[in-house]
Amino acid sequence: MADGDPAWTLLESRGRRELQQGLDRAGLDADAVWVDYLTLGGALSADELVAAVAGRRTLARRDHDLLAHAVNERLPADGSRVPYSDQLG
Image 1 (spheres, rainbow, N blue to C red):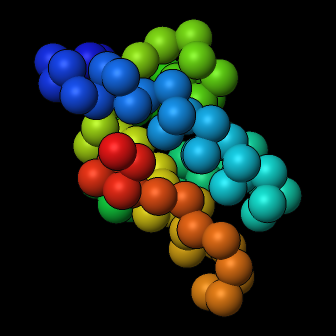
Image 2 (cartoon, rainbow, N blue to C red; image 1 turned 90 degrees about the vertical axis):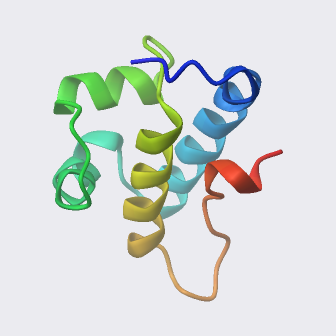
């Protein structure tokens, strides 16, 4: 679901790369953090989330932030973090 935010449209691909890099650092894939994402209030199915991270569908700003939070919780506290949408620009 696109969120209609033109600024986010320009940042979405960078956000996707940051998410993928964070997942790689954590040794996970999007499917592995799906339950965490749901617990935080996400609404995408596991397949939709995997497709969004892979670039096969859009990822709304809110979903990026929820997934970034889920990934950051799995990364070491003293390491590099996945930026939230307002930190990408």
